[in-house]
Image (cartoon, rainbow, N blue to C red; front, side):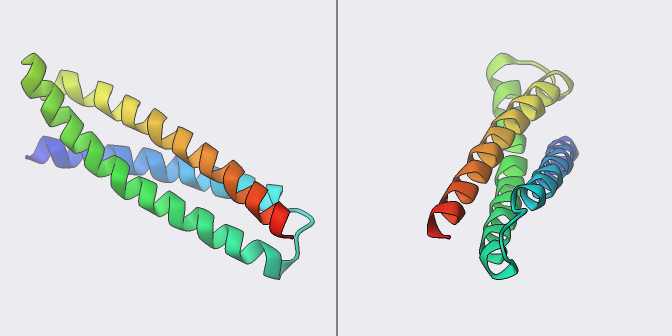
Length: 109
């Protein structure tokens, strides 16, 4: 059980770092927007990032346990693979969401 919590925490920390990097890129991408135009886009990205952190942490814990039981690997072998795959998938979701939020915000402008 402690190993599953550790897997979730490591995934959450990595996803928070990716979300923070995306937020800084969002702030740079919103250059030229007024504050009232940029606020809904920032709120949408922050909500997406927080939701992706929670989902990725839960998915990595579940995935590590499922992989370890299906392949008879130890958790020490299954956890890094699961964390890496879930983080890559989460970063792809954040990147796609980032572009969608910018595109929608630009078209409503």
